[in-house]
Length: 303
Length: 212
Picture 1 (cartoon, rainbow over the protein chains, first blue to last red):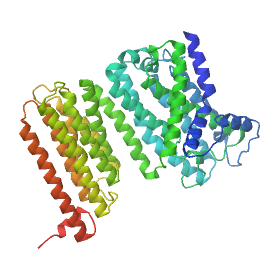
Picture 2 (tube, one colour):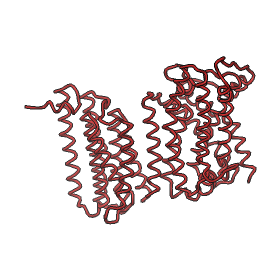
Picture 3 (cartoon, rainbow over the protein chains, first blue to last red):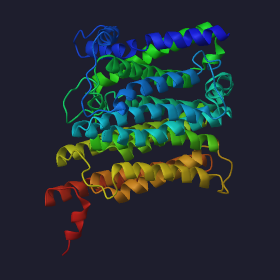
Picture 4 (cartoon, rainbow over the protein chains, first blue to last red):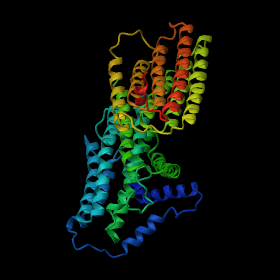
């Protein structure tokens, strides 16, 4: 029983870098290209780790600490999710706020690191990132509120574990709304297409990429890896809201979760192939729509 | 069967949000058409005992609201060659927020209304929400065509409300309402066409210039 938690967490942390690869590959295939191999990010990470680091003379300890804080906060957030549908590795009442807070902390560190370089370009990127984050947070908390109302539990272990599976049939409409809202959030938080284009390197359109331009070598590897894990965490959140994992045997649940991650990766790829990026002033509208979906889910439960 | 009708009602509210959130006129019309199709399926889902009354209501709604009117509106935007809603009185993000508040309010109010028992608890709040969203679109958008869609959505809300009492409302009244809407939209379409020819724009703000 306890073994599956650790094995699932380890598996998720291991396969995380494949998810952006799956998304890009799906997009390439759908747009008639062959695309980079699915495992490209592993090769990139291995290459970056072996490289040296360059620090600007104006950069301080804040810049050096940013990748470490980001990676650490994302990894701790991963400990809070019940990935096998049973229980998280550790959890407590109210840890949903800690989960949101840890993700915010990681972003905060990255933003400070970006500002610390003193480059006006990175300042622009951080301001955009924070704008997106400010609109994304209400949607995340409203979606988690749906889960709290459905299960009556205040910890992620209960909200996504066995109580969710028992309450599942009665609350399908709200959960589907929350799942859709979380999926829109996944796109926003991980800088995927309608919000940001991971393939672009044009100054005017970049959001997330701008902030990490000055990081190099192992620091950049940490940031890329943390980004992949964050992607996997949001995908896991979507999968566990939409599929009552606790109904299955722990090992089957773990397998279902990993399959679900791959499906989410493909969905992201399909969206990237089908949609263009939104204009920056339309992004708040996208995220307000996500909040409205989750809020509607809450209203349905309050009835 | 109520599960299915609940799902339909949820989708009706989502199409309301869709209408509030898009700028493209063709997308707004598509949303209204989808909403019409959902409404056509609704009486059949609500009343498992199929009667001629219910089937006629569903078929009539499908033809008028999901096929004829949207086709007519699509033709209108093609002839007037407008694509986007450019300057709404309230911005799109703000109108989405107002719409969300309206949905919340209608769910809160619907519980207090002294109405005879409806088939599903969602029916009355969704009807109120749709009426309010229709009103928002009708009052805050500047293009005459979007206002026509707002009127359609407003009427859709009234239709949903009527469904909660469908057993009591005579068939003829429903048909009369459907005919009213049809004629109303038809006339508005002709007016839209004439506004466009007169002013080369569909902004209803220009209507104040119509003095004699």
